[in-house]
Length: 176
Image 1 (cartoon, rainbow, N blue to C red):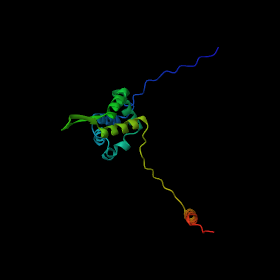
Image 2: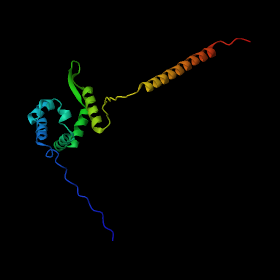
Image 3: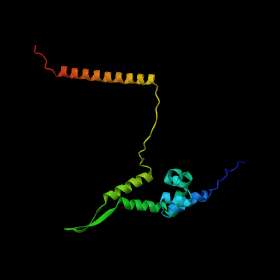
Image 4: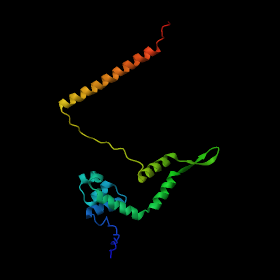
């Protein structure tokens, strides 16, 4: 008789906030109460230098996870989507001397909501600068320089030949 596969129990999500150390918990509480990153970090007991770069030094993966979990508890996804839809259709009301009160599309606000919706939906990728250091020795550098010069020479020669062909074909033919 074959054994039935074991059913896996769904584990309750780990409480990310409680898994943080006490200073990080205080930092999160400060941020949630509306304080700046620096003020929250100092109040949580971090040094001035840590507080200056709180986003890079304190907001590690576990802190971001705690923020996400708290946000998901406080604001359901359906409400976020509803507000995004409203923002995409934003209008503004103003007084027009001839027409009275006029409601028109508020394009700047709509654009901001569109960018936010694209980011949340994974359609928008932030531009990032990438720095890399390439070390090339003098021998390789001169070989690359020579290849570039050869390519330029071929391109220049090809353009000259192309112009000459165009002139020859455009020139009037002698009468026989």
